[in-house]
Amino acid sequence: MIDVVIVGTGFAGIGMAIALRRAGMHSFIVLERADDVGGTWRDNRYPGCACDIPSMLYSFSFETKTDWTRAFPPQSEIWDYLRTCVAKYGVAPHIRFKSEVTEARYDERLRAWNVTLRSGETIVARVLVSGMGGLSNPMIPDIPGLQTFAGSVFHSAAWHESFDPAGKRIAVIGTGASAIQIVPAIAPVAAHLTLFQRTPPWIIPRFDRPTTVRERLLRRFVPGYAWLVRQSMYWLREFRALGFIGNTKILALAQRIALRHLHAQVQSADLRARLTPAYHMGCKRILLSDDYYPALCRDNVMLVTKPIREVRARTIVTHDGAEHEVERSFLPPASERRNSFRRSKSTDDIARASKKPGLTAPDRTSASARAVFRTSFSWSVRTQASVTTRW
Ligand SMILES: Cc1cc2nc3c(=O)[nH]c(=O)nc-3n(C[C@H](O)[C@H](O)[C@H](O)COP(=O)(O)OP(=O)(O)OC[C@H]3O[C@@H](n4cnc5c(N)ncnc54)[C@H](O)[C@@H]3O)c2cc1C
Image (cartoon, rainbow, N blue to C red; front, side, top):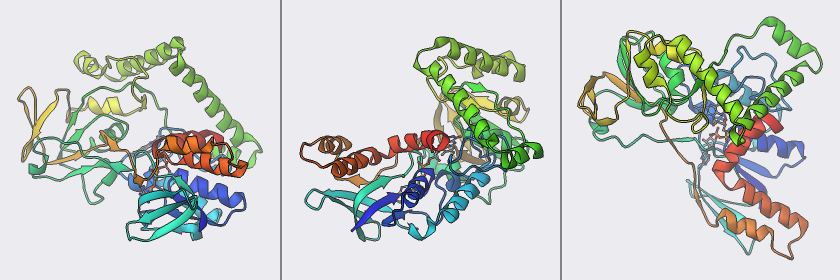
């Protein structure tokens, strides 16, 4: 029996593995269904893919990277960063690729997990840590007729690397965080781009830019400088969070900033109206972009706000009967399926078990560790917090 099985090699799984190594533990393995590490940042390779957390914050606190090329890290740099961490902290020998976990069953008698892989192999471990990610299974929405479409349909998380958008008529469905990165990246070369929007997002300026040589030198050579930059970014964001827990003045200010951004970038009153959210900021994820609105103002870009009724061989039909011609279509992650595998007990059961009288302190710790780690979604959210803050 081994001590710990970790599932996934995104920030969560790698962070956990490094923490175990740093704690002097060696009896653990990391199971990854793909053939490389990186999770989100390995899988999402669409044009314009980048993080909307500043580079200096989107990293482990114990492994500060000082030479990010931009204020907000592009996908390729984050993926490289994770691979560097794996090599530097000696995690690689613990990773087993092409090892998809299909089931985890807790054996009360053994007080251990039986972790089953797709190959049929079972691994027995005292503790199971899920780092499977909350967004790692892309979901294609169930739109009538989608199968009949003659062009190619793909999710942004499975971008066809051979796909060249130049000169094509393209449809993008959804206006979430990925779509607002893809649209400005491909609109300048596409023949025509139709964007289907259900709900407009609130968008604030991103202020992305290349980092200067001076900044990189300061971060690298001046003791405490990188730490100070990170701390200020962290506390600024924590301050903003007050808006979500009841300080309406902060949200009202942010909403004003977003509206000013929209007015500054979109001259057409009709387009502005269609891009103005009808809900309070904070009800959906707030997005950051400097180039999304300008892309929508292009002559070759059309924003459609009517719901999609069906897809035909070469067109997408909306509920008002309009047919929008497309040669190629793809679907950004309007939704992702929550990741999971079959598990034998609910998190609540384990949380209750951790409070059982008679358990020794180490028992309680390991039981509550299991309770915390077993819910992939909450773990992923925690990971985001710890990636950017606590590590
Ligand atoms: C397009 C996109 C953009 C994003 N942008 C931001 C951003 O700007 N800021 C931000 O804070 N967050 C962002 N996120 C969220 C991002 O997912 C998290 O920040 C973080 O990277 C999640 O890390 P993770 O380790 O929890 O999961 P992931 O990175 O999803 O890693 C999960 C890993 O588990 C593996 N796995 C899953 N199931 C199994 C299984 N059954 N068996 C074996 N292996 C399995 C997967 O292959 C994957 O390698 C974004 C997400 C996406 C999809």
